[in-house]
Image (cartoon, rainbow, N blue to C red):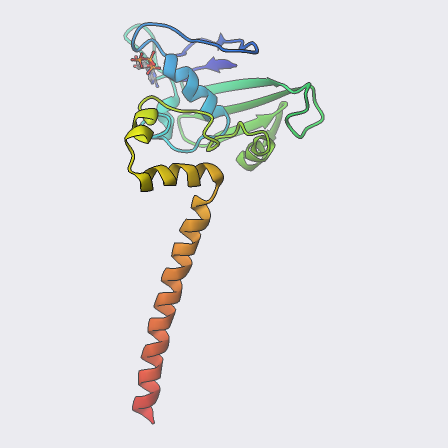
Length: 194
Ligand code: ATP
């Protein structure tokens, strides 16, 4: 993964992740979590809060006392696809995301401009996309352990992809209720007119 102008990584910084466990160690505030944020961001993360910022542009290097702010952030992730985990005919897949201060994100797959949807679709069957619960943030474990049984069920439902259907069901029930209200009102009106 190569970061350029992403959060605290002003200069191009490349990291190789070998098979097995990788540990990132460093003093507080040195940018360890920013590496994880970069991973989520390049895979299409859309929530500024999930990236620990107030707005999406906060991922762009904001400058330090010795270095001016930059105008763009870029993360390039190259995935070894020799095992064919990603549904694309390439042994190596490069996903990149670029953002400029004036907003908007550009995505590329193997150097070709594409949409966020293309990145999401490419990753969706591999189990590594965002919302796949592969990235567990600091404090998240705590909140899962301290959650009520209902809250914990919510995490499981989200992981299983049930939550969005539950939300849709609740919305549909509200719609049905309001339609039923309208029908009752109509019934009253008809009785009045008769
Ligand atoms: P801890 O061990 O305390 O969790 P960490 O090593 O995970 O720390 P991060 O949270 O990754 O550290 O990095 C925080 C640092 O990144 C802060 O110094 C912050 O100023 C810097 N930073 C975050 N966003 C930007 C940005 N857009 N531009 C410049 N620096 C940034």
